[in-house]
Image (cartoon, rainbow, N blue to C red; front, side, top):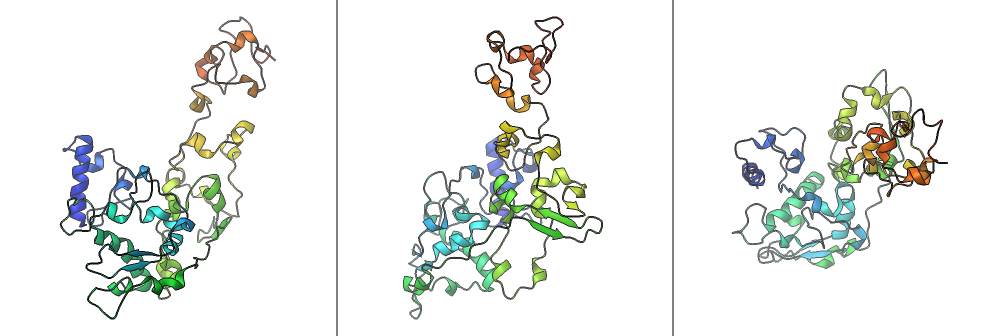
Length: 368
């Protein structure tokens, strides 16, 4: 699909969704990442996704490579080409860091995985021009990787034309791949980088914290990884130099800004501890996952220190006051929280003044 056609499609979709045609789409309530693969798209370099999708959160393709068939025959276009024999499981293993199943089954709705032909029409004169035809969809998914790795994208890599009697694609040609697995990519516990920053040369990155404790998936950081990084024997190491800050800025841009000390130090640093940000976690918070308080969008929301930021819905019926170390007596247990906790400021001492003159907490306690 040409960039101009995609831009037109996005504009029409934007107008139909929000009923506005006078605003430029950049000023509408759309996340740029829905349609663009980079942070700063321009007219000359729009970095557009081929299939912008406003319902990507509904994708439910979560399967392991072990569930995939080892080899499948793709013969939907058999009137033009001989069948293409595809090593499905091996490709599924290779795609694990870059998105897994959803890398190819990119717009699968909730439910079972659909065939490509369920969404992409095989006929040349298509009814729906908002997405590529089946031939285009197949090629789009295969050519970029094969070109960057093997430096060839000739048709014979995957299939032969029906008129070519000397080439016949069969599952027997790929039998050697059965049972083969991509070597497991091991996760490092941490990586310590020595940088060229003279005064603060060391950056300590705890990979396991990000992958498990903070709930990130491989694709969140490795979405631009390519087989070429490891397998392209013609490439020079200098070709893979990249902006070392880019993978981190997606989440830490606001916190870092010009404060290099957020990441850089003179020596290797320890793991993140909540007490270091002025909020040591007590027993009842230590068991919570980070997303329980900071949101689930992987860009953690900053909270203030007032308990009501999270616990604004506490009532005598849904909160067991004993967990605080104070068991309320029968009289006080029936009161609304705000009678003692003015403005529901639970992180401050309770006030007795609404009912008692001269009483102060904790000199006087409403229970044991």
